Length: 333
Ligand code: SF4
Ligand code: ZN
Ligand code: ZN
Image 1: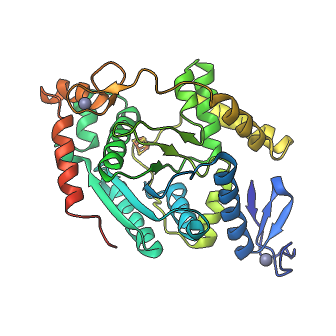
Image 2 (image 1 turned 60 degrees about the vertical axis):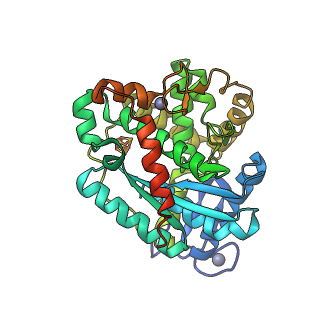
């Protein structure tokens, strides 16, 4: 974890001797702004090498919500790109139609893409599904976050397949990953646990490979990185954001253990990645009989959902709309 030092504290940067701005507790380091940014970029490079995250990966689609995690990831990627085999980074933002939150998110994404010279695709779900997220929540009576996750996963995968990129990069950091895995372990959801490892394989033309370059990066480090790098992120919280008591308790427990033994989370994350890698997660996946996207029982979650609300599976229509949108080209911001 990292902490920004108070102005009246006068420690020296370990690398250059100028005034330190940040204390990195797990590494027992004091660093100035420049060396902290470089330190985090190197940690992402090391994570990439440790797990072979960018092996055979030249073109990636980066999911951008507008928050500090995904926008920091984009900035870090643009900084380290030349040290990897990456040739093209494309950003994608899914506009959920959530008023002020969505407007602010789109602006933050556009600014980050402009600053990093990244081409971007912005996809409003209303264009694809005839409804925005609040309308879909109303129609389906499903919990907003589970509905939102399902829609985002479908659009990300479909866009990645249509673009023919090698992987989708997600902005999940280590604190989130550990909370998800521990919660899934408590509920014995082995498949979902295994989906949180740094690389989950894809299936040609059906399922995109997913990569998590922030797998070993603490959330605090990303907040500090975004702040010191001057990244403009969405400040308005999502109106559906709620505090999950299970996740909060797990997060608190992990934070206490990290305080007791700095670096504890990294060592747990490494062991989990090794063990979970063996779990087969692709075995039951088959193409949806309507839209050809991944499903576990022959009908994907979007076709099954829209059969209830539209009276027909609209996966095939979404596919055509995304194809048309991509033919118009990505936004050159
Ligand atoms: Fe979607 Fe829930 Fe996140 Fe809002 S808080 S963006 S509804 S997952
Ligand atoms: Zn320095
Ligand atoms: Zn389908």
